[in-house]
Amino acid sequence: MSRNAHGGPYGDGDSVLADEAEGYMLAHVHHDQARREAEALCARMPWLTSAQAEDLTRHYVRQRIGLTRQMLLDVVERAGQLRQEYEDRYAALRRDLLKRHAACACVVLACAGGVSTLACLLTR
Image 1 (cartoon, rainbow, N blue to C red):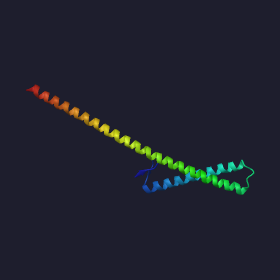
Image 2 (spheres, rainbow, N blue to C red):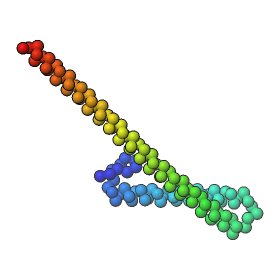
Image 3 (cartoon, helix red, strand yellow):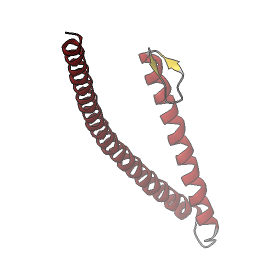
Image 4 (tube, rainbow, N blue to C red):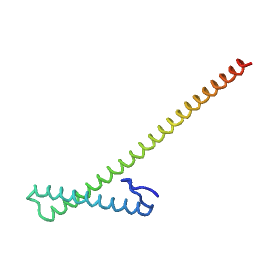
């Protein structure tokens, strides 16, 4: 069973559905915010006709949503790059740690063998 972004358990289908719902809600919030900004911009331009204001609002929202989409795609791409960098670094650290443990185990075994040999020689 996998976990969602917040650490709660979800089945695979539930996780996809939850992610889609979250994405839809986030897109809706961004769209509403862009619309409010466009309406505030149009309110500062009282000379616009209602058709011009609607046209400006539509273009502003479209551009803002496009910019937001591009920003999110860039963030997703960078997150993937960072994930790969961290995984590579983690693998390198694990290899180094394994090498160190193997070296320490060899030293301990060599010392134990030497002490055992010395003990056998001294007891004769």
